Image (cartoon, rainbow, N blue to C red; front, side):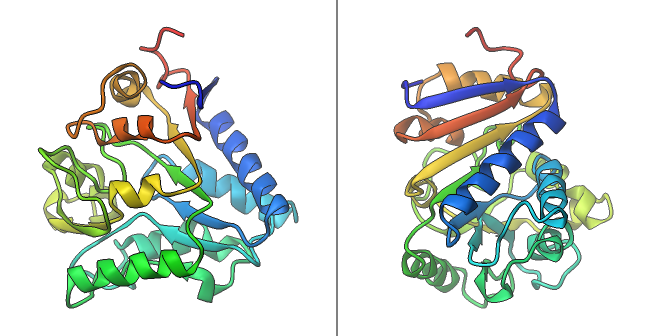
Amino acid sequence: MPPAHRISIFPGAQAVARELAARIAHSLRKKPALVLGLPTGRTPLLLYAELARLAAAGAVDFSAATTFNLDEFYGISPSHRGSYRSFMQRYLFDHVNIDGDRVQFLDGSAASAADEGCRYEKAIDEAGGIDLQILGIGSNGHIGFNEPAAALEARTHLVTLKPETRRSNAELFGGDPEAVPTQALSMGMATILDARSIVLVATGERKAACVEKLVTGSISTQLPASFLQLHGDVDIILDEAAASKLTL
């Protein structure tokens, strides 16, 4: 990885969450009107719990911040229990002092996926771009819902989800992978790389192989996360299990 990509390793997932929450709180103190890109999935749950704890203690202030989430299932409404919009409300937005008008989200019930993608790109531009983008990484190397493929979309787009991605989201749909929508809306890789700073978080041994390829491998559309090598300001925060295949 280029020198601008900083790797930090912590003993466990809880320590990773504390570190990242502290960094977000610091960024909000430096720039209260921070534009923050946020992920969903299992990895950020501890982060959101830690941010809720800091908010309860008065140690983080989201009142002037704007958020954009990476992705959303397509074909369900924002109020659907399995939607990422509902997920974020449950685990973060209900617990911090963010202005609801500043919560930006893809609409999975939009009649036209293409029009919704254009609307989202315009909203990001009008907000001044994303200052800090938080990312997880899928076990197959996907970022957002940018799945391994022969080619990757640059901007917000409709994607067909891989079976392993649907399985990993089954918990949101009563544990049934078949109930997970087959399509989703996602920021594209260029949209993600436009963020001024990026932090990628990975925890657990299941992510170790992808992390190793991200750090030491070549750029490939078969590992969408590898495109982070093109960005000049990336922090990679890992627990020891996710870092277990690295030789640093």
